Length: 260
Image 1 (cartoon, rainbow, N blue to C red):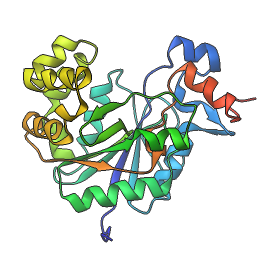
Image 2 (tube, helix red, strand yellow; image 1 turned 180 degrees about the vertical axis):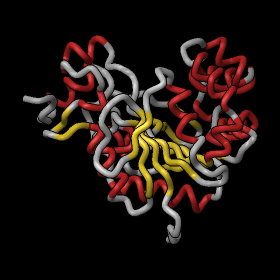
Image 3 (spheres, rainbow, N blue to C red; image 1 turned 60 degrees about the vertical axis):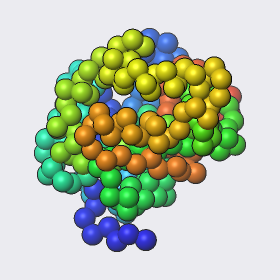
């Protein structure tokens, strides 16, 4: 086990407004403040980080009152700028753990496992992926997006461990990628034709045509940084509550959602 002599800085992204459907279902304008079992999602995420043993300073980005012992940064109104502003205050070679405020089932054990394994890899950035079957075993009612690859079918997690310098150096790329996220052609220009063709053929013909290594290689080329996937069994990392459908599924599963 890696000795965490210098805990990482955690940044909780809690900006933005609830989508109209989610607002109508919950009455909460910022989903970070949605209560599950009597505790806001933001408070639940902060507690998991605080109790992990691998996190030091916690920065909450959003126009709200942060949980106790957390530092606040204002919401810029732009997701990428929220990511970037937190990286400015952290030394270039130091790691930042980004988390979203809408991951209410995050646990200290899940955080610690991901951070320790990420630091052990020595990569500039690490991203968790979860086998889809494990997600359905633990949270059978929750819908999710997944990608079938040579190694299996995975869904992404809501954490990112990355060196602050990597974030700052790739600010323009992050802005372009976020702006292009809803356009296949715009994303293709960024990712390159090769990876897009492989992805299409993998979906049409066989998942074996696209592997983790293919994706990682392209990400490393784009970011000019080393990257490492962390395959985790902690399905909690992959459950985010940002749609009215998610709230309904939680209620059907017996969770107390909202102020009632």
